[in-house]
Image 1 (cartoon, rainbow, N blue to C red):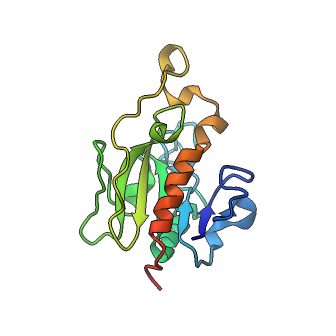
Image 2 (cartoon, one colour):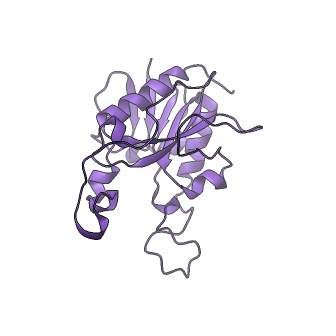
Length: 198
């Protein structure tokens, strides 16, 4: 089963796979027309802890929610074609788009009236050198299978005040998707292979 990987790095972990149709920036994933289920990695900088809540804020990141419609397009693609969307834990986009908020101790969580399931998983269980807590949103015909829940046992990284923190890594290293995590997301998307909405 082919899946479409949206908002991915060119030449990254999804490139060259026969079961993946990658959509890096030059293909504009906001215009993905289907029909494959998706693995969506919408940009997270404007939804994270360092985003500016108002233009006058002194925060160092972009204005909150200013992502040129990427997150909205990712949610729409997952809901229309089935699949999985991933974003950092505590993403402001979750509440903005009414997605079920995951619980840290594991398990899938849905919400009455909300389509799909959400969970928190640490990428350290799937090959990342940091714990990297991540929220997943899955739309599929049935509840997704259990994952490796809880804290990942990874070696400390960095030194000083930020020791063990993903922020002690380079921007590219922390943003990269490890192969094991990509495999998990592809498997989840393939399990959502039925088109869930017209």
